[in-house]
Amino acid sequence: MTDHAQLLLVEDDENLSLLLRRRLERAGYVVRTAGTIAEARAAARVMPWDLVLLDRGLPDGDGFELCRELRAASPHGYIILLTGESSDEAKLDGFRSGADDYVTKPFLHEELFARIRAGIRIVTLQRALLESNRRLEELSLTDGLTALRNRRAFDEELAAAHELARRYDRPLSLAIIDVDHFKGMNDTHGHAAGDAVLRAVAQLIAGSTRATDFVARIGGEEFAVLLPETGLFDAMQFAEKIRASVAAATIRTGEVAHRITVSVGIASEPHTSITNATCLFEAADQALYRAKQNGRNRVELERRRAPRKVAAAARPLQIATS
Image 1: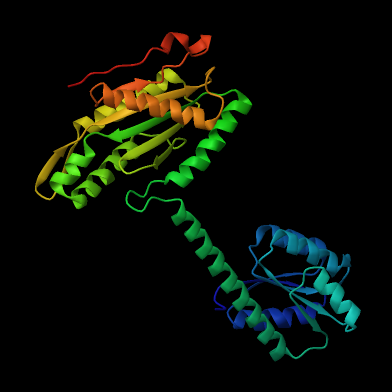
Image 2: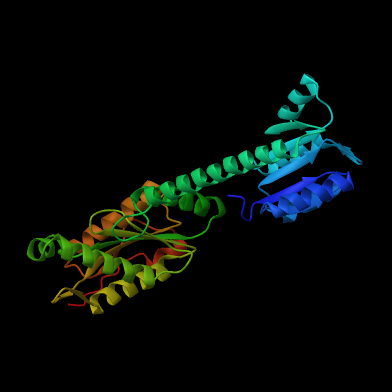
């Protein structure tokens, strides 16, 4: 547990600092020393410390002040104060400043090292817990089948992207993509084959997007792509690229080769009728419905009246490929 743990030793007594450093390094810690508050600040800026041993009485100020700064900068690090002041009030002040432990001088080295080991254990457990929580949060936003973002993540991103587009008057487009005749394929070939097809379609969609785009699986066989900084014409080109790439692909599940098509609905803002994220989604969803009604394997646009600057491109795009 001590391997590679980063310790910052702030102590102005050079002899004590040298002695502690040597013993700590022999115990397996990585140690950096500082003799003043200024040196400690500089070291903390470049060193991702796990634990700080901090003397209170430093040449350029009170160690409590530095303790508060270190705690604010690293809420999950561990701070042990080293001081000759043993009064209850001094100890309370130390804990109020953000210290986790308080050791009075002179001290037994064995006791100090036991406290350091306990502190590193706590830091290690805290980091493991934070990482576990991060992974759980990531899983809660990820579709387990396709590894794309899920509906919850999409709803959050849609709201944020819409707000950003409205605030700075920037274009934003949304494509909703649905796999054609998916239920029939599931009924004929089974759900395992259906899952394999969805994974393949997800890869085709993700492979056609930019790093700034946001791709999600939002339903059974339905996907969505948010296109920031993308106007109507570019969104149409993107949608046609997706449609064509899926139509051209042969997806194999076992010995069966599947030819899959998708229908795509597009909506874009700025738009006179789109006033919130829900309106944008509904417009794209209605366009998708028309694409399905009009024969599938095609791209359709939302039909509501658009502002003058995009009016020339506001007529529905109808691409018949069959």
